[in-house]
Length: 306
Image (tube, rainbow, N blue to C red; front, side):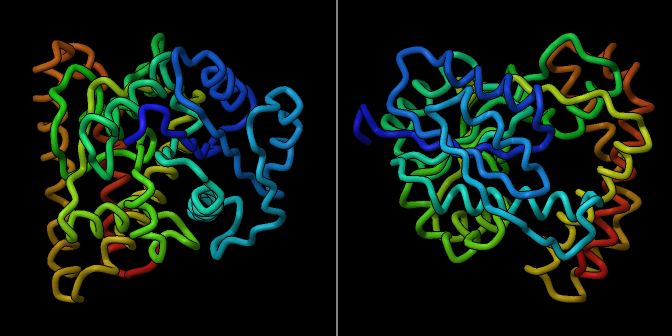
C-alpha cells in the first residue's frame, strides 16, 4: 500500500443536522492525513443535507434524488434501507485505494486517517475495523445503548482478528470491495459482505488504534425500543438468507435464551474494563434493549422478512 494511498470516506447519515456538521468538521481537523475523499450520499428525504455543501467545499455531496424503500419511509426498516442504499451509492462513487464507511454519530479522532493508511500499509488486511468509544458525558440510557451496540469495540481491547467488525468505523481495501460488489451494488449489508470475504479466506481485523467517538441524540425509551426491534428484525432477515428453514426454526426457538446470555456477557466485559458499577445501574435499560433486539431478530429469522 502506497504511503500516500487515498482514502475515500463514505458517510452514513443517521441523524444529520448538527451531528453531520460536527462529523464533517472532525474530518477537517485530521493531522498528517493522506489524501482524503469525503462522499456524502443523500436523498430527497433528507434534502436539507445539500445545504451544508457550501460550508464543506472539499466534500462531495452526492444527490441521489428520490429513493422509495420497500417499507414505509417513516419506519425504522424503511430508514435502514435508505442508509443501505445511500452507502451503496457512495461506495460505487469512491475512487480511493482505501474505502471507509463512517457514521455521522461516530466522529473520527484527529489521527484517524493517518492511522487507517498506516494500518493498511503495514498489515495488508482486506478489512480493518476500529474502536468505537462512547463520547462523554452521556445519559444512562444512551450509555446502555452504546453497551448493547458497541461493547466489544470499546477500548481497552487488544487488536487482532475478529469474527465481527462494525460498519460504524470500517475500512476496506479496494480489492475487497471490488470482490464483493455483486453483494452491495444495490444495498450495503455489512454481514453479507464480511461473511463472503471470510468464506474466501480473508480476515477481519479489529484495531484499537483506529478510533471514533460515538454520540447519539437523546431519544425516549419507546422510540429506542422500536428501533432495536426493527434493526434486530433486519439482522435476522439477512441471516435467514444464508440458512435452511430447519436451522431458522431452531434458532428462533432458542431466541428466549439469548438476552440473559447477553446480560452476563456484557457484564463480564464491563467488569474486565473496570465499569461494572455503571453497568449494574444501566442493567434495566440493557435488559429491555436486548430483549427488543432479540424479539426482532427472531421475527426476521423465522419469517425471512425484513
